[in-house]
Length: 296
Image (cartoon, rainbow, N blue to C red; front, side, top):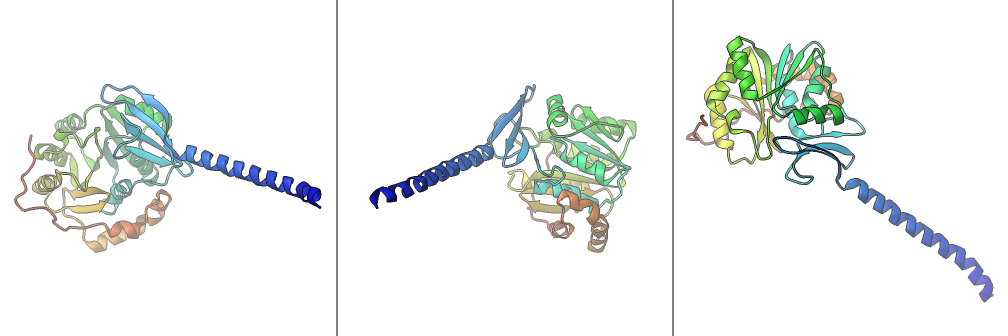
Protein backbone atom coordinates (compact mmCIF):
# COMPACT_ATOMS: atom_id res chain seq x y z
CA UNK A 1 0.00 0.00 0.00
CA UNK A 2 2.82 2.43 0.78
CA UNK A 3 4.51 1.97 -2.59
CA UNK A 4 1.16 2.38 -4.36
CA UNK A 5 0.50 5.59 -2.39
CA UNK A 6 3.85 7.01 -3.50
CA UNK A 7 3.13 6.18 -7.16
CA UNK A 8 -0.13 8.14 -6.90
CA UNK A 9 1.39 11.12 -5.09
CA UNK A 10 4.42 11.91 -7.28
CA UNK A 11 2.43 12.94 -10.39
CA UNK A 12 0.18 15.09 -8.23
CA UNK A 13 3.16 16.81 -6.63
CA UNK A 14 4.74 17.31 -10.04
CA UNK A 15 1.52 18.88 -11.33
CA UNK A 16 1.39 21.23 -8.36
CA UNK A 17 5.00 22.22 -8.90
CA UNK A 18 4.42 22.92 -12.59
CA UNK A 19 1.32 24.96 -11.77
CA UNK A 20 3.27 26.98 -9.22
CA UNK A 21 6.04 27.63 -11.75
CA UNK A 22 3.46 28.67 -14.34
CA UNK A 23 1.86 31.10 -11.87
CA UNK A 24 5.27 32.61 -11.12
CA UNK A 25 5.99 33.02 -14.84
CA UNK A 26 2.59 34.65 -15.47
CA UNK A 27 3.10 36.99 -12.51
CA UNK A 28 6.57 37.90 -13.75
CA UNK A 29 5.25 38.47 -17.26
CA UNK A 30 2.47 40.75 -16.02
CA UNK A 31 4.85 42.63 -13.75
CA UNK A 32 7.30 43.04 -16.59
CA UNK A 33 4.59 44.35 -18.96
CA UNK A 34 3.33 46.84 -16.38
CA UNK A 35 6.71 48.34 -15.59
CA UNK A 36 7.79 51.24 -17.83
CA UNK A 37 9.76 50.17 -20.91
CA UNK A 38 11.80 52.75 -22.76
CA UNK A 39 11.01 52.37 -26.47
CA UNK A 40 12.94 55.32 -27.90
CA UNK A 41 14.90 58.42 -26.95
CA UNK A 42 14.91 61.29 -29.44
CA UNK A 43 17.74 63.84 -29.01
CA UNK A 44 16.60 67.44 -28.71
CA UNK A 45 18.15 70.84 -28.11
CA UNK A 46 15.51 71.40 -25.39
CA UNK A 47 15.17 68.08 -23.51
CA UNK A 48 15.39 64.47 -24.68
CA UNK A 49 11.99 63.20 -25.85
CA UNK A 50 11.24 59.74 -24.45
CA UNK A 51 8.75 57.18 -25.74
CA UNK A 52 7.62 54.80 -23.00
CA UNK A 53 5.30 51.76 -22.97
CA UNK A 54 3.52 50.91 -19.71
CA UNK A 55 0.12 49.64 -18.51
CA UNK A 56 -0.99 49.04 -22.09
CA UNK A 57 -0.30 52.66 -23.00
CA UNK A 58 2.28 54.45 -25.11
CA UNK A 59 3.44 57.71 -23.58
CA UNK A 60 5.72 60.64 -24.34
CA UNK A 61 7.81 62.30 -21.68
CA UNK A 62 10.71 64.70 -21.39
CA UNK A 63 14.07 63.74 -19.84
CA UNK A 64 12.93 61.02 -17.40
CA UNK A 65 10.99 57.75 -17.58
CA UNK A 66 9.38 58.48 -14.22
CA UNK A 67 8.35 61.95 -13.08
CA UNK A 68 5.28 63.96 -12.08
CA UNK A 69 3.33 63.33 -15.26
CA UNK A 70 3.24 62.40 -18.91
CA UNK A 71 3.12 64.76 -21.88
CA UNK A 72 0.97 62.42 -23.98
CA UNK A 73 -0.42 58.90 -23.67
CA UNK A 74 -2.69 56.75 -25.81
CA UNK A 75 -4.28 53.36 -25.20
CA UNK A 76 -2.57 50.87 -27.51
CA UNK A 77 -5.75 48.76 -27.76
CA UNK A 78 -7.96 51.76 -28.63
CA UNK A 79 -5.87 54.77 -29.73
CA UNK A 80 -8.85 57.11 -30.25
CA UNK A 81 -9.93 57.02 -26.60
CA UNK A 82 -8.45 59.97 -24.72
CA UNK A 83 -6.47 58.83 -21.69
CA UNK A 84 -6.29 62.15 -19.84
CA UNK A 85 -9.10 64.27 -18.39
CA UNK A 86 -7.47 67.45 -19.64
CA UNK A 87 -7.66 66.38 -23.31
CA UNK A 88 -11.37 65.60 -22.89
CA UNK A 89 -11.91 68.96 -21.17
CA UNK A 90 -10.05 70.85 -23.89
CA UNK A 91 -12.04 69.10 -26.62
CA UNK A 92 -15.28 69.95 -24.81
CA UNK A 93 -14.58 73.58 -25.78
CA UNK A 94 -16.57 72.57 -28.87
CA UNK A 95 -19.65 73.02 -26.65
CA UNK A 96 -18.78 76.72 -26.75
CA UNK A 97 -17.66 76.84 -30.39
CA UNK A 98 -19.10 73.76 -32.16
CA UNK A 99 -18.26 74.70 -35.76
CA UNK A 100 -14.69 76.07 -36.01
CA UNK A 101 -13.40 76.20 -39.56
CA UNK A 102 -9.80 76.86 -38.60
CA UNK A 103 -8.06 75.83 -35.39
CA UNK A 104 -4.67 76.73 -33.97
CA UNK A 105 -2.97 74.36 -31.53
CA UNK A 106 0.09 75.61 -29.62
CA UNK A 107 2.06 72.55 -28.48
CA UNK A 108 1.85 69.26 -30.36
CA UNK A 109 2.89 66.55 -27.90
CA UNK A 110 1.85 63.24 -29.42
CA UNK A 111 -0.92 64.94 -31.41
CA UNK A 112 -3.88 63.57 -29.42
CA UNK A 113 -6.11 66.63 -29.83
CA UNK A 114 -5.17 67.55 -33.45
CA UNK A 115 -5.77 63.94 -34.52
CA UNK A 116 -9.16 63.92 -32.77
CA UNK A 117 -10.21 67.30 -34.18
CA UNK A 118 -9.44 66.16 -37.73
CA UNK A 119 -11.95 63.32 -37.24
CA UNK A 120 -14.58 65.33 -35.36
CA UNK A 121 -14.35 68.33 -37.72
CA UNK A 122 -13.67 66.84 -41.17
CA UNK A 123 -13.93 70.20 -42.93
CA UNK A 124 -11.71 72.19 -40.54
CA UNK A 125 -8.04 73.04 -40.97
CA UNK A 126 -5.92 72.40 -37.89
CA UNK A 127 -2.64 74.33 -37.63
CA UNK A 128 -0.21 73.30 -34.91
CA UNK A 129 2.82 75.24 -33.71
CA UNK A 130 5.51 73.14 -32.03
CA UNK A 131 8.81 74.63 -30.94
CA UNK A 132 10.73 71.35 -30.81
CA UNK A 133 11.23 69.44 -34.09
CA UNK A 134 12.13 66.36 -32.03
CA UNK A 135 8.56 66.28 -30.66
CA UNK A 136 7.19 66.36 -34.20
CA UNK A 137 9.48 63.51 -35.28
CA UNK A 138 8.36 61.38 -32.32
CA UNK A 139 4.66 62.18 -32.85
CA UNK A 140 4.91 61.02 -36.46
CA UNK A 141 7.01 57.92 -35.79
CA UNK A 142 5.38 56.62 -32.59
CA UNK A 143 1.97 58.26 -32.07
CA UNK A 144 0.23 58.03 -35.44
CA UNK A 145 0.31 61.74 -36.23
CA UNK A 146 0.28 62.60 -39.93
CA UNK A 147 0.58 65.95 -41.65
CA UNK A 148 -1.64 66.85 -44.58
CA UNK A 149 -3.61 69.63 -46.24
CA UNK A 150 -5.91 69.93 -43.20
CA UNK A 151 -3.31 68.94 -40.59
CA UNK A 152 -0.44 71.41 -40.81
CA UNK A 153 2.54 71.85 -38.49
CA UNK A 154 4.77 74.90 -38.12
CA UNK A 155 8.00 74.47 -36.19
CA UNK A 156 8.66 77.55 -34.09
CA UNK A 157 7.70 79.51 -31.00
CA UNK A 158 3.98 79.82 -30.34
CA UNK A 159 4.03 83.48 -29.35
CA UNK A 160 6.11 84.46 -32.38
CA UNK A 161 3.64 82.60 -34.64
CA UNK A 162 0.65 84.37 -33.05
CA UNK A 163 2.25 87.81 -33.28
CA UNK A 164 3.05 87.20 -36.94
CA UNK A 165 -0.52 86.05 -37.59
CA UNK A 166 -1.74 89.28 -36.00
CA UNK A 167 0.52 91.40 -38.21
CA UNK A 168 -0.70 89.54 -41.29
CA UNK A 169 -4.38 89.79 -40.31
CA UNK A 170 -4.92 86.02 -40.04
CA UNK A 171 -7.59 84.81 -37.61
CA UNK A 172 -8.72 81.56 -35.99
CA UNK A 173 -12.07 80.37 -34.70
CA UNK A 174 -10.45 78.27 -31.97
CA UNK A 175 -7.01 78.51 -30.37
CA UNK A 176 -5.85 75.77 -27.99
CA UNK A 177 -2.84 76.28 -25.72
CA UNK A 178 -1.09 73.12 -24.52
CA UNK A 179 2.55 74.18 -24.39
CA UNK A 180 4.67 72.86 -21.53
CA UNK A 181 8.37 72.42 -20.97
CA UNK A 182 9.81 70.12 -18.28
CA UNK A 183 8.53 72.44 -15.53
CA UNK A 184 5.47 74.44 -16.57
CA UNK A 185 4.05 76.73 -19.23
CA UNK A 186 6.79 78.99 -20.66
CA UNK A 187 6.52 82.42 -19.00
CA UNK A 188 6.09 84.37 -22.24
CA UNK A 189 2.88 82.39 -22.93
CA UNK A 190 1.27 83.50 -19.66
CA UNK A 191 1.32 87.29 -19.74
CA UNK A 192 -1.34 89.92 -20.44
CA UNK A 193 0.59 91.08 -23.50
CA UNK A 194 0.62 87.57 -24.95
CA UNK A 195 -3.10 87.12 -24.34
CA UNK A 196 -3.80 90.45 -26.00
CA UNK A 197 -1.98 89.25 -29.13
CA UNK A 198 -3.95 86.00 -28.89
CA UNK A 199 -7.28 87.79 -28.54
CA UNK A 200 -6.46 89.85 -31.62
CA UNK A 201 -6.21 86.74 -33.86
CA UNK A 202 -9.57 85.33 -32.74
CA UNK A 203 -12.63 85.77 -34.93
CA UNK A 204 -15.39 87.89 -33.30
CA UNK A 205 -16.85 84.84 -31.54
CA UNK A 206 -13.55 82.93 -31.42
CA UNK A 207 -12.59 80.84 -28.41
CA UNK A 208 -9.31 80.22 -26.59
CA UNK A 209 -8.68 77.08 -24.54
CA UNK A 210 -5.72 76.79 -22.15
CA UNK A 211 -4.45 73.75 -20.31
CA UNK A 212 -2.96 74.75 -16.94
CA UNK A 213 -2.38 73.18 -13.52
CA UNK A 214 -4.96 73.09 -10.75
CA UNK A 215 -2.34 73.29 -8.02
CA UNK A 216 0.01 75.75 -9.69
CA UNK A 217 1.50 78.54 -7.58
CA UNK A 218 0.54 80.73 -10.55
CA UNK A 219 -3.16 79.80 -10.34
CA UNK A 220 -4.46 83.11 -8.99
CA UNK A 221 -2.27 85.29 -11.19
CA UNK A 222 -3.11 83.22 -14.31
CA UNK A 223 -6.79 83.62 -13.50
CA UNK A 224 -6.48 87.36 -12.96
CA UNK A 225 -4.58 87.72 -16.26
CA UNK A 226 -7.18 85.83 -18.32
CA UNK A 227 -9.96 87.83 -16.64
CA UNK A 228 -8.17 91.11 -17.42
CA UNK A 229 -8.04 90.25 -21.14
CA UNK A 230 -11.20 88.18 -21.70
CA UNK A 231 -13.50 88.96 -18.78
CA UNK A 232 -15.58 86.01 -17.54
CA UNK A 233 -14.37 82.55 -18.54
CA UNK A 234 -15.24 78.91 -17.97
CA UNK A 235 -13.05 77.21 -15.37
CA UNK A 236 -12.94 73.41 -15.75
CA UNK A 237 -11.10 71.30 -13.17
CA UNK A 238 -10.27 67.59 -13.09
CA UNK A 239 -6.63 66.93 -12.30
CA UNK A 240 -5.53 69.80 -14.54
CA UNK A 241 -7.41 73.09 -14.91
CA UNK A 242 -8.68 74.13 -18.35
CA UNK A 243 -9.64 77.74 -19.06
CA UNK A 244 -12.15 78.39 -21.86
CA UNK A 245 -12.57 82.06 -22.79
CA UNK A 246 -14.16 83.84 -25.73
CA UNK A 247 -13.66 87.08 -27.60
CA UNK A 248 -17.45 87.41 -27.58
CA UNK A 249 -19.96 86.65 -24.79
CA UNK A 250 -19.96 83.17 -23.29
CA UNK A 251 -22.97 80.99 -24.20
CA UNK A 252 -25.55 80.27 -21.51
CA UNK A 253 -26.15 76.80 -20.07
CA UNK A 254 -28.95 76.05 -22.52
CA UNK A 255 -26.73 76.66 -25.54
CA UNK A 256 -23.94 74.57 -23.99
CA UNK A 257 -26.34 71.65 -23.50
CA UNK A 258 -27.72 71.94 -27.02
CA UNK A 259 -24.26 71.97 -28.56
CA UNK A 260 -23.12 69.07 -26.37
CA UNK A 261 -26.11 66.95 -27.37
CA UNK A 262 -25.44 67.60 -31.05
CA UNK A 263 -21.80 66.54 -30.61
CA UNK A 264 -22.39 63.50 -28.37
CA UNK A 265 -22.21 60.89 -31.14
CA UNK A 266 -19.07 62.37 -32.70
CA UNK A 267 -17.30 62.63 -29.34
CA UNK A 268 -18.18 59.17 -27.99
CA UNK A 269 -15.35 57.28 -29.81
CA UNK A 270 -12.86 59.48 -27.94
CA UNK A 271 -14.23 58.52 -24.54
CA UNK A 272 -15.91 61.90 -24.05
CA UNK A 273 -19.12 61.68 -22.03
CA UNK A 274 -20.83 64.99 -22.77
CA UNK A 275 -22.96 64.93 -19.61
CA UNK A 276 -19.89 64.46 -17.43
CA UNK A 277 -17.99 67.18 -19.26
CA UNK A 278 -20.90 69.63 -19.00
CA UNK A 279 -20.77 69.30 -15.21
CA UNK A 280 -17.22 70.64 -15.23
CA UNK A 281 -18.21 73.99 -16.80
CA UNK A 282 -18.05 76.60 -14.05
CA UNK A 283 -18.08 80.39 -14.10
CA UNK A 284 -17.15 80.54 -10.40
CA UNK A 285 -14.43 83.06 -9.57
CA UNK A 286 -12.14 81.15 -7.20
CA UNK A 287 -9.17 83.52 -7.04
CA UNK A 288 -8.43 86.60 -5.00
CA UNK A 289 -9.74 89.93 -6.29
CA UNK A 290 -6.35 91.51 -5.64
CA UNK A 291 -4.30 88.88 -7.51
CA UNK A 292 -1.68 90.58 -9.67
CA UNK A 293 -1.84 90.34 -13.45
CA UNK A 294 1.14 88.69 -15.14
CA UNK A 295 3.02 91.00 -17.51
CA UNK A 296 6.04 90.88 -19.79
